[in-house]
Length: 78
Image (cartoon, rainbow, N blue to C red):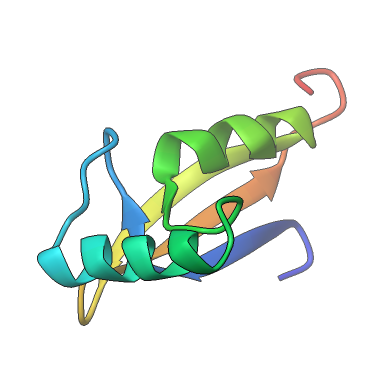
């Protein structure tokens, strides 16, 4: 994707896991390293904005995953 970035995987929404399996996966990751874990979509949006990206869409995917599409903002909006 030339004009933006994207991500695929489990994410939480409004600090709530979207499935029990995602909550277990988050707990497993954080047990390995407290800096790891399932990220919240709002946090991804904030981090993207800090890098000049704008959240364009969140697409529901199979098995409780999401595709997140961010696009580079025009320089006058960044």
